[in-house]
Amino acid sequence: MNKQIIRWFFPGVATVMFITFLIALLQDYIPPNFQEFMSNITGSLSFCIMLTLVLISVRPKAIEKKLGLTDMYEVHAWMAMVLPVTLLIHVTIRWSGIENILNFNLTNTSILGYIGLITLIVVVLTGIFVLSDTIIKKSKKLMNFKGNANRNMYLWLHRFAIVSVIAIHFHVYNVSYLLENTAFRFLASFYTIFVLSWYFLFKFKLGRLPKYEVVRRSKISPKIHEIELKPMDGNRLDYIAGQYGFFRFVDSPVKSEAHPFSFSSAPSFNKDSVIVMIQEDGDFTSTLDDVKEGDKVTIEGPYGNFYPKDVRQSNEPMVLLSGGIGVTPSLSVLREEIANNSNRRIVFIWGVATEEQLMYYDELEKIAEKYPNFSHHIIFSNEEVEGFPHGFVDNDFIQKEGLKEYYETASWHICGPPPMLAAAKNLLKENNVTEQQANIEEFSF
Image (tube, rainbow, N blue to C red):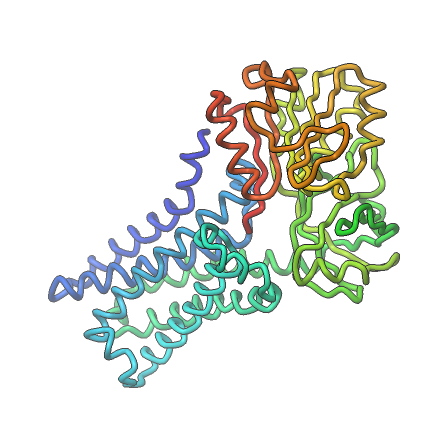
């Protein structure tokens, strides 16, 4: 199914809930004027959007496999931007003007409304400015703020979404003209209980995830750590090369919320352990020097479709295009292909900023010696390194390396920082690489 169609799944869920609310409302209640009708519509729509946002937060696997977690969270971000608009219209009409919101006339209904409104403001602000870059990615100042913010603290604040949903549910239950509307109240309770049950079940499962033990940690460059983990119960996570999981240090000096990291290991080769590469780049990753052998970690996942089934089952050429630490899933896929004695044409392209960031070059050289269908092409952007080209992965570089034919014949697998991804997307578009050929892993959450 086309990805653009799947992107409308969650807005569609909110729309279906809203339509059922509207039908139930109008069966028992005729708004006295247009303003009252708009207040009812925007209030109901706001509640439906809130429930849908909580639903997205549990990362439904069936949708994630089709859409990808990055696109799911982008849908989440845009729906979260619509929410304040619909809520503002509802509140302005209900309070007879925005200036009257602070004229506290406290009833049970209004108290619950205030709780829902205040907590929702906290949730929206933390989501926009810290937990997602969908809205702020074009502002350097806001992106710097996001990078320096204490993500763990803001994640906890973001969880006020559950408080907001519960408060708004009981707010709806206490609205005078809905007291006798059994259908509307039933729908409000049914949708709320369904979504919150799924949410708390998801959290319960996270708390019962099997633990992994750190068996090795090494620093393979000044800012990049390689960590190997083994399952304490002997049952390694079943993942596909190129995927990622959410890692959380639990019995460790490093305390953190779960963070997404790609596997660099090959599941067919590393049968008893998983390996990740993590770059120091924030308040959590800067503490990785404190990680010790024996520390315990949980892994939730796997997620991602960087190496889809049709590619795994074919023997067509493959281009692994990476920027910086984005090489991690590419290494996983390459190692998996080698572990399975692949004879397909594999082109490994890696854009690196400086020589000290170059890792596993000896491994790439050995693979190239053993497998004639493999070639690696490394380019440095921030400094000139003897024996390597200097610049960026662009059309000129692709042509000079003799790789232009793969625009048409190969699947492309791309991961890297946002500027590199933007340039890579333009490169593919300019050369008519189809959406079906491109497999792009983004971490914009």
